[in-house]
Length: 309
Image 1 (tube, rainbow, N blue to C red):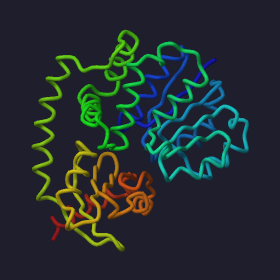
Image 2 (cartoon, rainbow, N blue to C red):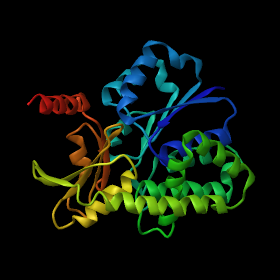
Image 3 (cartoon, rainbow, N blue to C red):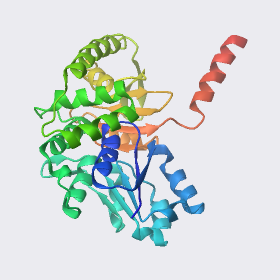
């Protein structure tokens, strides 16, 4: 039985399902996507009959539009697909039999990884994924992805994200697939601790240099602090949201090479609702959206116009 995993390329919550899949299944492929590319990928794959070579298609930490869901629901593909997501903006997909979207349960915010992990536990008799080290790593991913600052694992969860950024996706997958097979407890080794110490200093300097680069604008009923940043998306957003808590309702982090990220504190702004203005989705305090079509081209044109003037 051959499977295809489609997951989010951006963070540990998208990468951990690849590791879990490797621990459980022998024959699989995986495809990592940005959230903005899921609809197009699904449509093209259906048109090109790409999915016919797979017996099961698993989608984690991502969702598609209702129009794509309707296409799937009206095709034989509906019996192959299992979608596991946690973003509030995707809850409407629960109307379809192939989708399981859970934003929160048992007073805990869910991640795509935890929903997929529970599915594997309930449906496959696999000793490896029942190991404590696997369970602990799944929880670290959840805590980091939902920014659960109340958890005693919060700092460790952020370190896991830092290691992904330092290792890169392929090495991260390879490293932790082997580690979870061989280990009983989860820990960071001496080399990783050194990497994390260096990264922490680099991150603090990076964010400190951004504090005077926030541009505040009124957007509808919100006061928004805009900042350009390509690294430490969550840390930048949350740190600056706290730093500017008396001046803005939310922080919008613009990564020209990837996406928009939105962060807020307390209940000052529902950033899931704000992200929907940009065709994005997420949670009340954390959300994302694609870079608007043509945005980078407009910036380049603006620079050229400045030269001409």
